[in-house]
Length: 392
Image 1 (spheres, rainbow, N blue to C red):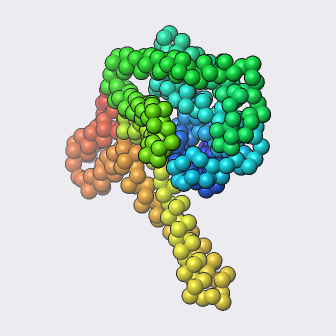
Image 2: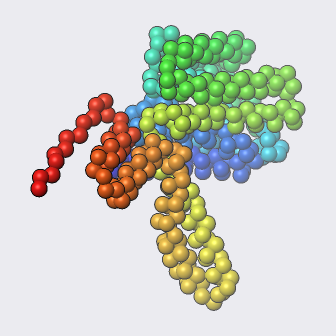
Image 3: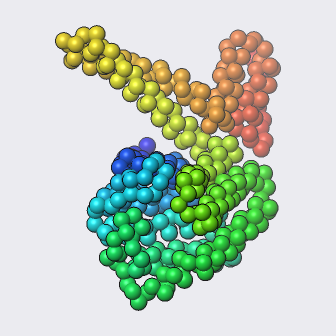
C-alpha cells in the first residue's frame, strides 16, 4: 500500500468521523436523536467503496450526501440550535447568527431532492440511458433552484421565527412556486421517471447484476415511499406528536439506500470489495473490543490499587497489546465467512489440499486433488498437468 493510498483512506475515514461528530453534537444540543441516525449510512458505505474504487460514482455520491448532511449539522451548530421540545420534536431555539439558520434550512432541499439520483447511476456510477441523463439534470436543477428559493424567501426562519437576513422580497413568488404544490408535483413526476428507468435496466440485467438491482430497488422505493408518506401526513396533521414520531422514522429510513447497496456489495459481489468490507468490519470490532478492555483494565486496576495509577495504565496497555493480534485473527476468520466468502473458501480449499498432500502417498490421487483445488480456486477455462515417470 502506497503512502498516497494510506493518506486517502485516512482522509476518507477522518471525514466520516467529522460528519458523525458534528451530528452527535447537534443531537446532544438539539435533542434530535434522529438527526444523528438519519443519513449516517451514506458516508460510511461511500468510504468503504472509495477505499478500493476511488473513482466510483456511487461511492462519491454516497459520500457526497454524507458531506451535505455534515455541513447541515455544522450550520445548525453554528446557528446555536438547542432543543425545546423533546427527542423527536423540531421545536427549539436558535441563538447563533440568523444566516446560519437560513442556510441550514435551504441546504435540506439538495439533501432530500438528490436522493433519487442513486437510481440513475447505480451500479456503474454513471448515468447509462438518454432518458436518465434528462432526469438527472432535472433533479440537479430542481435541487439548486429549491435551495436558492428557500434561502431567499421572506417567511420567518423555521426554528427561531426571526426575519430571514438573506430574504429577497422580489423572489417571493419564485419561492412559492418551486417549494409549493407545483414544485412538489414536478418532483414526484421526476421520481416516477427515475423508478421507471431503474425498472427497465433491472429487467434487462441478468445473474448477479439482477440481484444487485433488486436490493437497490427495495431500498430506494422503501425510502421514497416512507418520506413521501411522512410529508403527506405532516401536511394533513401538522403539529401532532405521533406525526413527529413518524417523521423521525422517515429520516432514519433514508439509510435503507446505503444499506441496500451494502447488501449488494457483501452478498452479490458488487465492485468485488468483499475483502475491504471484511477488513473494515474486523478492525472496527477489534478496536472497540480492545478499547473496552483497556478502559476496563485501567478502571479495575485503579480501583484495586488507588495509590498506583501509573501501574494501572501500564497493565492495561500490556493487556490490550497482547490481545490485539489474537482477537484480530479470531474476528477476521469469522467475518471473512460472511463478507469475503470467495477468498475464505479458496483458503479452505488450499488448506485441505495441503493436508491431503502431506498425508497422501498415491501420486495419481495427488494429481486429481491438485486439479480439483485449481478448478475450485482459480476456475481456469482449461487445465492440463504434464507428468514424467520415474526411472530406476
